[in-house]
Amino acid sequence: MEYKIIHQFRQNGGNSNLLSALEASTREVLRIADLGEDRVFFRAIVGHASVGGIELVREHIIVPLLSAKNLSVQWVVGIDFNSRPKDTINALNALIGEFGARLGKRLDIRIFSSNGQKKSSIMHTKMYWVGVCSEGRGERCAFEQHRAFIGSSNLSVGGLVENREIGVRIELSEKDKRGIRELETVWKDYARSDKCHSLNEKGFYARFERRGGGKHTDWKGNHPKHKKHAKQFARN
Image 1 (cartoon, rainbow, N blue to C red):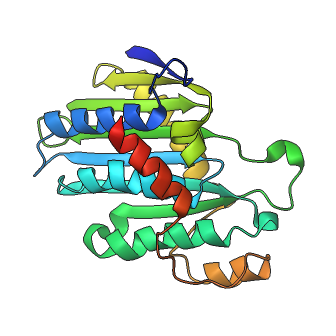
Image 2 (image 1 turned 135 degrees about the vertical axis):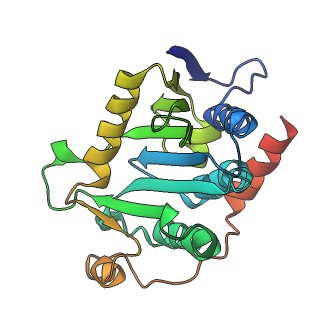
């Protein structure tokens, strides 16, 4: 296991940020993977997501990963229905509309809601996980490479690029079975929670609207703040 601190602190022209680190790890996974056979995945557990953050990750992480035949994208996103998060829900649904036919059940976006619970139980997690697992080379997943990012960054333009944030990138291989199991446990704790519901789940939008989320409408992906920061990121 290896690790590196990701210090997102823009000073003296520095441009280190989580999005750059995620993009570099994506390129590394694609470089070492057998894109026709290996299982490649991108998982995220975040307490908050914004339209601009979703679009940045779509452009810089998901679209490049589509070159892998067996790609899966699985997210758990925290939602506070009291904040009327219509734009975030629509942006997540737009990902399903764009990539759902290609990825099928391998695209799974879930909403984690703590509404009605004590404030101390509000979801505040931030983890991003890119990995490759080679099956069929003897034992299951005989070859693995994982890059997990754990820190303070939400899935937003600020969290990915703009804000002052800190986190750690953890690199794991097939030799690090314990670390991989611990990451899997974290993922299952959220994804299988009774507070977690798939956007594809029957009746989701009816419950969403009843909780004050607002009417579901299509999202056009033209968020002005994203456009501004996407241009800045492209220049760095």
